[in-house]
Length: 612
Image (tube, rainbow, N blue to C red; front, side, top):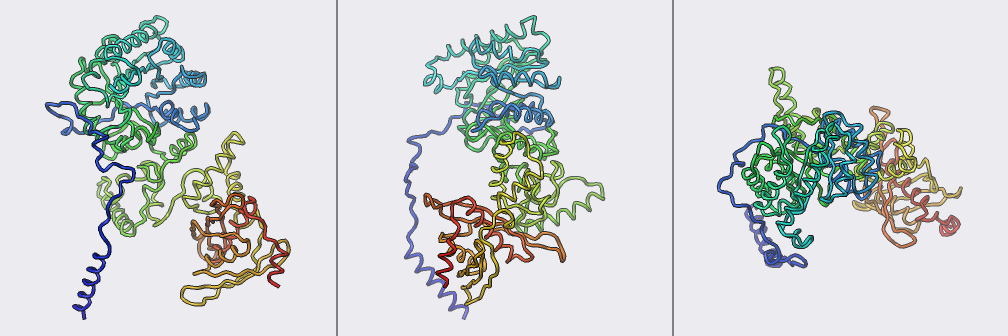
């Protein structure tokens, strides 16, 4: 019998292979041979590489450019108040160098720079970016007057492409321009007797360094260094940015090592990295850049920035932390950092973002969870014997080190909802709001906060949630379900009959589906004359024992009446059992749609006449 089965399967497999030919790529838009359009980025000529054998053993200097590079990339830039909140959070984390603005660009940026100068702790350096133009440099120096510690950051595009295409500038002209700007900054800052109360530093960026011939990058920086005359105690900062990430991280490391080994007076130079994430390798490029000799790292918290963003400083720092290296930044309360970032940037931190994401400590796989549980059990035994090394499967970092607890770790398929408004809803209503609904609700919260001009209180957020999602039909009740019954006709078909009340008139409903949810959706579709379908569905229990209730979350899909376009709306239902809570959620959502005006209230007279 077994032999005949194997033969039959082999024959069947043979027939399938004959009827389905190999799939051939169509290349509708992509080129089959991309080498005719793109080239592999050349690495600098290296006689010997030392960085592959190096190890990161100490933290670099950190500079946050969230308030400048990060802010300029936002579709809706931060308000002054949001920048103030963000600034103080960066100080709280431990950043000692913060690039706060482009003060010559606007009065708003100038005013915020003044705020930072007046409110920075004495060990925090305020940095400002400026183009290599005399009137802009003077305005920038003015904005930093009176600072305890300040850095002027000038830049000039040095790649062949930018010099030739954008600026029509030779290498010699570029060097002259950079030196001219450096001398002016020096004259207005460290050489000015009236500015001696400030500890002045200088940073120069050969913009597009990663696309610049490395020999020329060294040459222009040598000229800038000679003009500034740095010291060992106050080295010049050469920021070597991957303004657009164009190659693999090892090539960037080669470029950094070449620069570090060819620039003169290395002890008077601080090499800084500034990696963008166009190829998704900014963290790796930064880490390899440190191995290659970089002393300082510029980036943004959670990787905000132009296009695909700057390097994520949280990831770089906590990567070091998990290798036993003190990063000199404190992420003990990662949740509050996420909240400030999302509130001020108005961009959500991905739930899968390393360390900061909502889901990074959640195990949804049963086997993963089992391994984690066993790891915790063994960890406890080792701690009693004095072994405090962290060794838990699937968890490279102890969640408690960044202010997380273990609840999410041991809840299979749990979407924690710990941050912001979702956390308040969990505490006030006991509802663990699904992730897609969290994203939807965050927009409502932001709009309400913008209208009031302040942060919403917990009670206000709870009431807003109830109103927005017609919590258990408490806000809008155009259609009230009086009773229903679901009868099983066969293995795949269920028939629902019931009654609803509309404007004090009882109307019968009927629907067919493969279960209670699809049956009630079909019945309500027939009632309102619009095609409804469930786009997202989630449920969970509230409470325990005899007081346990079921909560259901439903997102309905429907077609708008005015333009026949697809639309979506959420609703929430509670009941003693999950079947009734699902029905309540669906009805709550439909009543919410009717309240929006996108689906009209059913014509009761017409329905009653049809029933008769």
